[in-house]
Length: 238
Image 1: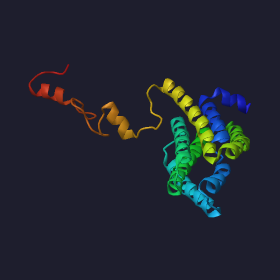
Image 2: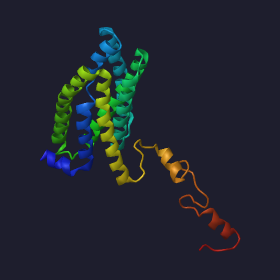
Image 3: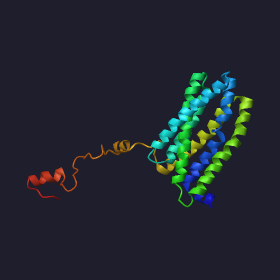
């Protein structure tokens, strides 16, 4: 019954399909980072720990950012997944340890923002009586897909190198996010993946600042300036 409910609810269906792809391919950092530290940067356990610390710092910032959102939106889920994939591609190309650590901060930030927003989207988009079943499917997809993907990414790390592990994880995630982004654009017109602030929406609509009156607008209970001027010259209202 939970699967049928998810299939009938587009927001849940889209979010969980993207999670299945990202969980399988992208979230295998524990497989990629040790190989990257040892083979590409000729490091040791300290190098690996530094990479984990960098991702941890980014994850804390991502969690705080997710907590500040007014409400989960599927566009934010798609945008965070796509940005995580792009950051992974940059990490695959980084040639110095300093640059790698800096990019891993971004990877941690956007990956945690993606996971937190996906989790809250699935909870708030579910009916109260179905929420437990939906989150059960969420847990099965996320925790069950990562071990499957770890086998693939581990094989890629062994045969091609850790940088290719990042690439193989990022490309399917980026493609899935792009496809879902196209679906959302067709459904919502030209709505951006990252939602604008209320002030930006008002500027785009030409409404100005909140509380500001345009030409000819009247305060509640008062005639407009045009009608008031006509009455002053002896003309009645229309």
